[in-house]
Image 1 (spheres, rainbow, N blue to C red):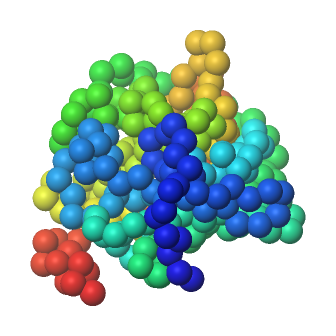
Image 2 (cartoon, one colour):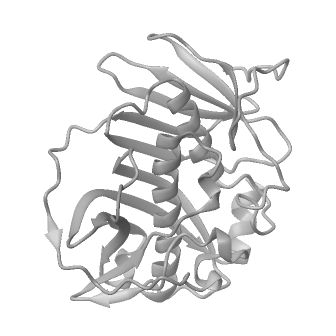
Length: 282
């Protein structure tokens, strides 16, 4: 597939994408991801590649512009197949399929960077409830989640209770310019990503200098933000160190009780500097 030429794009307000073509009910919608190295959120610290969270947010923004995030609860899968470089255009496509699902593809220089699927969740409404744990308001240490600016920290400090780790989801400026449903999903995914990093350091016992590569996610999450006094929290059941390469993180709405509203499976790979250099050289 050839990369769509970057000529006279129809620019729309947003943080992550310029829409070039929005398809009708059937067909493929396309956009060019907006990669701004001066962005204070996605490039919170120096990076040698386009971060996966920027690509994830661009895919979600394109999906909402195409009315693909209308369901109140969605399943979203995304697998990263290679690193996305900083010096070439990045095309994002969303193709509707029979049955209501949409195929997501991220392409750079004619090669697939990430592939995914977005669909209405067919899971019955989750009714699992738990007692409300003590959730700290302050941000977790930036060192533990690989963030430099405190305003970009998406989770609060970790609380361990009855064999589970909990953290409050904090408001983030990372999704401030996204349309509402894309912003809701992106914010919980970014919080889960940071929560996962902290878990990999503490329970996966990976040192602070390790390179953490997130290779894929599967999320079943709501597309609407909690209302009123309800906040969001994340929870993970503690498992042995060797099982932390795949983290199942549950999403809760917390009011008088903590009610499970979704879950996210994160797959990652942790490598040292030498191994990372070999991966980047491929």
